[in-house]
Amino acid sequence: KNTSEYKVQSAKNNRLPDISLSGQYMHLFTTTNVDIKLPMQSSGGGMGVEPSQLLLGQASASVPVFAGFKIKNAIKSNELMVDLSNLQIEATKENVVWQAINLYFGLYKTQRSIDVLNENLVRANQRVKDFQNFLDNGIIARNDLLRAKLQASNVQVAIDEAETQYKNINYRLNLLTGQDESKIVHVDNVETLKTINQNSQDYVNRTDIKSYDVKNQIADSQIKIAKAAYYPQLAVSAGYIAMDIDKVASVTNATNVGVGLKYDLSSLYKNKAEVEIAKAQKLENEMQKETTIDKAKVEMNEAFQKYDLAKKKNNVYKEAVEQANENYRIVKDKNDNGLADTDDLLEADVQQLQAKINQVVGDADEQLAIYEYYYTTGILLENVQ
Image 1: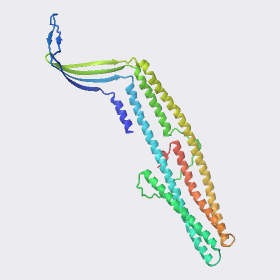
Image 2 (image 1 turned 60 degrees about the vertical axis):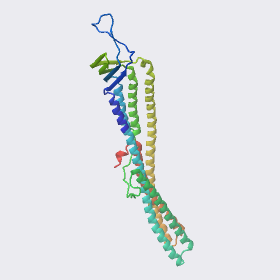
Image 3 (image 1 turned 180 degrees about the vertical axis):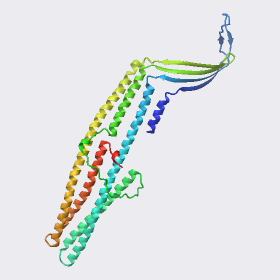
Image 4 (image 1 turned 90 degrees about the vertical axis):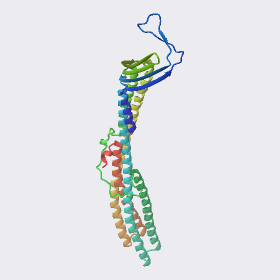
């Protein structure tokens, strides 16, 4: 952004006068002859002298008055480049926010899964103690105890894996947000967002589409800059000259003011290619914009379908939790009364555990899908506190 702003200032500087100072000293050889013709002299000839040195100093200033609108359009083009830089900054910020949201939800899902697993581990360890007592009293076979211990071990491994994943996500989030790398982030809950509908799809807020609109305006300015060569250039100039020729003359206070006109006739046939290049760049930009719009429509539609699927899956997960809880309760009662074996109990326990984890993930994925939809429609920053 700073580079673009400096370019704007540089373009504006072209409207300022060009001021220059110069001085020269020249040694003249003795072979130099100066013949001064003055009006009062007779026609018989001049006065021959042999100067040995020449001193010359001058100052000049030139202010452009008209340059075919080149300066004006150059300033506008660079101002538009600042706007383009701002859009790129906004796009970068939006992308970072989206990454942070993904990591944040990743932490939430992992943390909640660990909570569910720890609850299940308490029950699994208690089951191992109960089965040990049953074995000691000859109620169950030893392999039932081994299966209970194996299931408790599997839950512990799942907890260890989830905690490792949590640490990795936590570390990435800290790096992304510039926080202390060792900071532990706890996510108690995620914000519940309202539902969305497909009719709200609109790509006009996307920074990539906005960028092409600005690029089109820049292309228009570049075309006008290229056409500026077809116009004459007009400038006002002023100057001061001081000169001393040894033994001949001394000139001081020689000031001058004038108007300069320049017209490069060769530009009438040489500049056509530059104008066509600028027009072709604008056409290429318009075609790229159409391609980007199609891509945006695809991304928005896929994001909405992803949200719709996540919502349907989450509804199923909520029902599954109720079913798994009831199933475990029934199987547990049967097992306590000797009507269901250990395999049935452990299977019901795994099903209940998986159903609870699925619901945790389902809730988070439904909310994350809404954020993703906001991201694809270019309104993510407006919906993030």
